[in-house]
Length: 103
Image 1 (cartoon, rainbow, N blue to C red):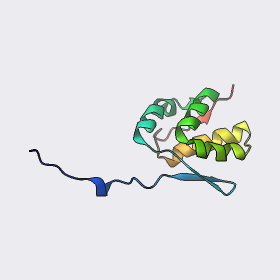
Image 2: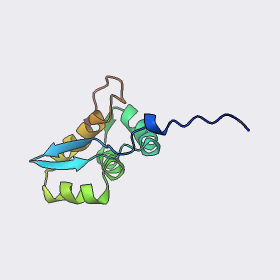
Image 3: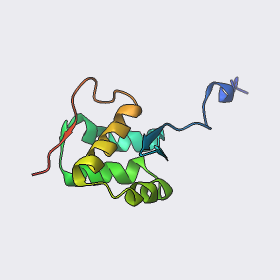
Image 4: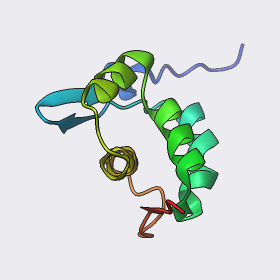
């Protein structure tokens, strides 16, 4: 039988990052598979409204989305919140500035 090394104690299953908007804490999905799905969008740099919405759906659970929607953010603030959530997850874009293109 091959040697098995249990690395469970080196992993963090309990914590997910959050952002706070107007005193409301909103958890961000940081599952690796989902991050790999959105990485190409993040690498593009500028994003359109469809990209922002895709990120929103991927980064936030239904519960978190309800919290965000209850804040009644305008489009600019909504886009900022989504993009800032990607920064919380780490510098995926390796220093590139992500700016939503709302044209």
